[in-house]
Image 1 (cartoon, rainbow, N blue to C red):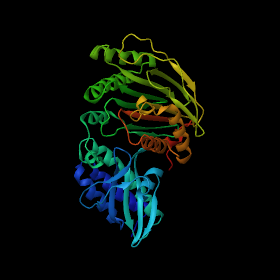
Image 2: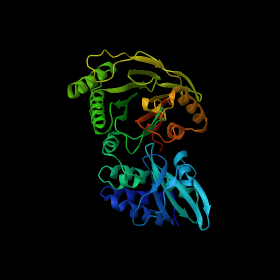
Image 3: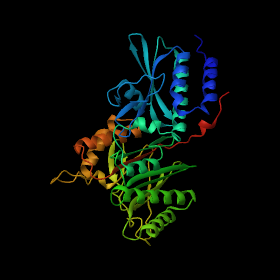
Length: 402
């Protein structure tokens, strides 16, 4: 069968031509048909669940269903975590697992079987997986099908609101990588995070709205909305904090507030600046070790009104990682027991770091490790947000090879 690059271009072109107006329910049979054209069968699309623990099969005509697969300990999970193709021999051929990457955000895994595999197959399937990931993300904007597939338990209304606010929980460029996770995934209320890469500046925010349930979710919604509005007006960090502070104070009065960290990283130079409005100090990780907590001047929580924000700064070294987190991570404790604490958090980081490569792997593994140590107890929201500065530049990606 012809699987040359010319054939692959025609195949992917036909898929792309039809994808623009394709209803979400027809993505599954369309992908199955494209795989069949290159001699493949037994196609599955597996999506990451909200807990980041399992890969859940998407149901649809032409797709193979089955039980969810664990991210840790399965071939599909290996492809997902490593972000690389995995091939395993099976009785009737080669089972292939390809990560579905939208940009660098991990959507899930596409699995299929071929009788034999060569480099033409690998090139074509890598590009097909990229196109499938883009289709899933694009169609996700106007269907509930993919949200529902990813859920493994009921979700609270407050969590529904929070998930609708979130950007992709990971992003990777040659100069910087970010990754985040929220707990408890199906009942988070007041915690949220946001980021945007504008030219050479990475803007970041981690917030924790007071209270629980719907009230916390509404507070968080206003805080994130105010943050994005000010960020898009391209104001300095001090003005950004003041705008958020005024928005919360005007809407809710001085009795309700949001703790937050707002930061900016120049991805060309590694110069970091941040405002800490009531959060634990971020941790600086270098060479798999936490070398210090980035203590600095504190600022009143957002919403108290009239505070003068204090700006902290730090010059990062290449490959430094900075971990921002909310207090629910370290203040959790069993009934009558001591708090989890920063010291145990640091030990967990230094245990997990050497066993992971990417920022997303580290955040996922750290979150799951901490949850096990807390014996699954999560009485308050807990969030992790990691940024890794890599340095260099990305100009080569704009060059076209002819």
